[in-house]
Image (cartoon, rainbow, N blue to C red; front, side):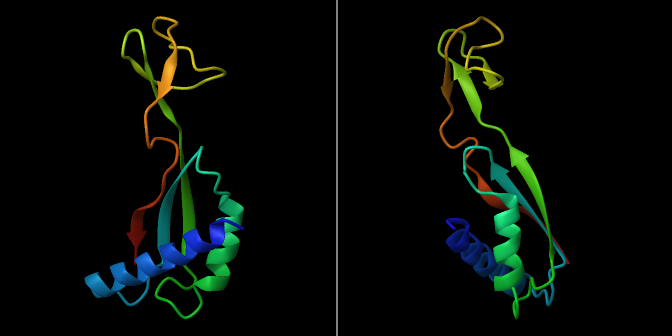
Length: 112
């Protein structure tokens, strides 16, 4: 259910993009969804199909690019994606979440 306001904002942003670029119809939208965002692609799609009616993105195909959280090792400063744990693959040190990674919900691209 928390996808509803996110999809409302998404559609408003797509309408703004259409207006700014003079586009009548958007046919495809690629969204980045982070693994820690808790957004579910199927729910986003369901709300989008309902709420996009009458907008420039009505009938557009949604594509989802799932992004992973990134960590920085507190010992060697290496960056890595987590696997089964949060241990640095380079040195075995503890990984700390890089703020903002894995929480994305944003438009990556739009096609007409």
